Image (cartoon, rainbow, N blue to C red; front, side):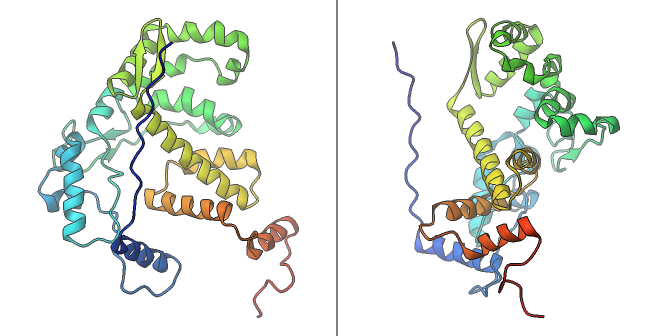
Length: 294
């Protein structure tokens, strides 16, 4: 029996003194401390391209040039923290998925226009109860098919909780997987190198698919743990983390991840302020000696 190939290990990152100084400068500013100078942490997008001399269309279809443009602009202008190309969604992926929510340069917009959101009722006014009752099911079976042509087959699925039965895994699920629209959707994911898919043999995540999935899972876990620290019940924290994870800047996610890890792994006892907050959340009253004097 052949062993599955192991994922290559990334080399350990050793931050330089300059890196640590920039990180401290940024963290001091966020903590309302006086930094050695004002940190530069922009969320520029198209500016990064224009400064480096490439078009917005090129930035969506030539990822190597986009990376070089970001590096060049960041280093030349001495930014302390680079902006994430979060609005530079990969054009080829959007084409494969048949994205309906955006228009973008190099496809259906001029090469130097930024992407445009397509206003539409992706969720109807009478569907709020359905969303709140089961967010994951609603997003997968209702919203995603409306937002991308390649994902329309997901609308053919039965409610996801039906698959909690061992019988349905052996009957209904293979039936759906064999439907031509579902098979076509899997083939498009395979074309993006997120899965390996062979008809009648199933699908398996590639290294890139695992990387993307792991990043999404870590982001969700971070937000969920943070909400639980704030005394949000676990079931609600899990649901709200699903909503939050799609709307936060990567810089914010990084800092939240550091905060949660620090709180969980710091060898010191639980901070007094966290215990005070727990008591305040449960009683609605400030613990003795906690409130600032009038």
